[in-house]
Image (cartoon, rainbow, N blue to C red; front, side, top):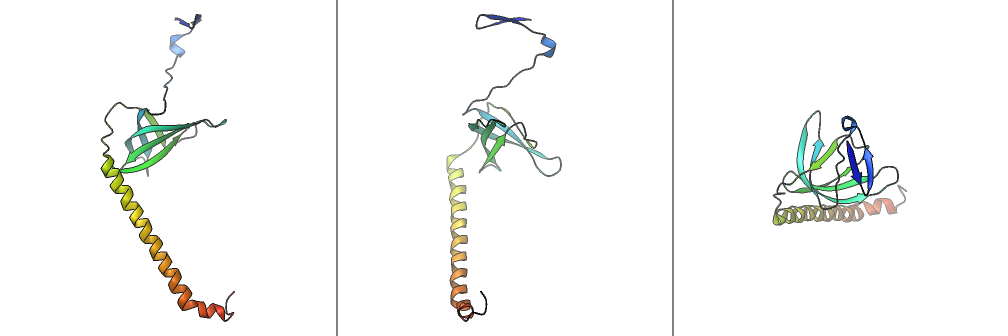
Length: 137
């Protein structure tokens, strides 16, 4: 087959030609994620970045897992349990649902911080005297 690219004519064997997929930031994709054993899930996502590392260029994808959780995938030559392909479907992602999920995670983390602060305060008030006596360094 003879092809002209920018005024240069190139001849190649179609039997050995392969399709090269191109992706750009903002493209909608499906992310195939391998889980335990041989189970996979296909998740809608968006390419959010490209890390142009010298030895391992990496595509960064934000994808929706479980209908509302946002996760990140890093796709490169070394990726074994991840794969992406173009997708033109609807993300079916509701902003309010994601914000509710994130707010819930924030509240849970804040509760964990309060719990740890209470444990620290209890420790200092109830065990502090023991340590002040030089019993344990």
